[in-house]
Image 1 (tube, helix red, strand yellow):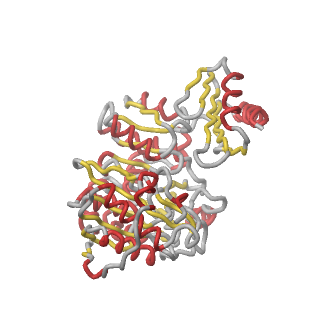
Image 2 (cartoon, helix red, strand yellow):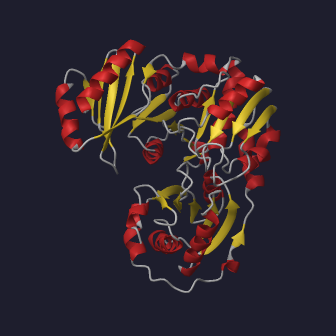
Image 3 (cartoon, helix red, strand yellow):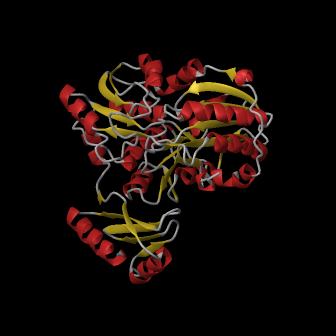
Length: 440
């Protein structure tokens, strides 16, 4: 078994060279041993290898003595809903999220005192290595559950006050299409469907909306149909991106602000979690609206943990994950979709105008640099930029009155990741070039 698949947050690798039926079987048994879960709900995405691995997952859980309930093909948030809503001890989703089609993996949850906890892959590796293969039990004992009527009723509360709009939705040939069709009659919105047919080959573009060229198709369709905007989901639909009426992909931290305003308007003082590489506009607007900004290290797990710790209302990050207290502190692309539609309806402005007012600064995408000694380069940067305000929450962040930057190390690769933001385009370009030269 390739133990490198047991990651900090989940289990993930290439099928079948890394992720195998045997590895999934062992991981399922390790999950039950680690969590003591007796009643587990399972689901899978649309990847070509998911049905085979799903059977291996069920066999491993049954062999470990757990009762298993299947909700079948589902977005990841379907598993979150099932664990949060019903009497399950844990849940496992077969998915590799937005990774290329040759990948697959497991996202794992357990319920502890009514709260959902994410189970980290790295915590299962030793138990999985000790699993001895057994005769696979029959999978006929698996129960089946249809969650979608209850899910639709739950989402109805977030489908209020939405005006008639024309919206393009790109499902990325993932698993959100049938869910959109389940809830679309709740809202007076004309939805133009793109890539709603689940297809693990992802024939039209990458399952990752941030991959170069992925949003070209939806951008063209929005402009062609003169739509009010669009939304693009990733392969397992736990991430969602807003596209404005000109076809431009909206930065995820700007979308975070749109969503944050909804919660702060309803709950003065509401805590909003954001990570260390979001625009400084996020805490500035949250404070202006009388909310409470909660800064976290990069990574959805960190955003969620700090949201819980500080009893906030929602959190988000640059990869398009948005988690909500109202959704068991988990991420939901559909909740983000519905709330964004409410905000767009309420403001009565074009999406481009809305996001422009929340984007006063100029910011780079995250830049990656291969370095031999990450610690040495970080030390050099820290010593050089001593005239700014330094923060070491995640790598090193240095703030100046009219610009800031963050350099943080990758956990798994010999990479340093750089983010720069400035008050002007000219200053951004100058400082990006300066730091790039300094790092290399």
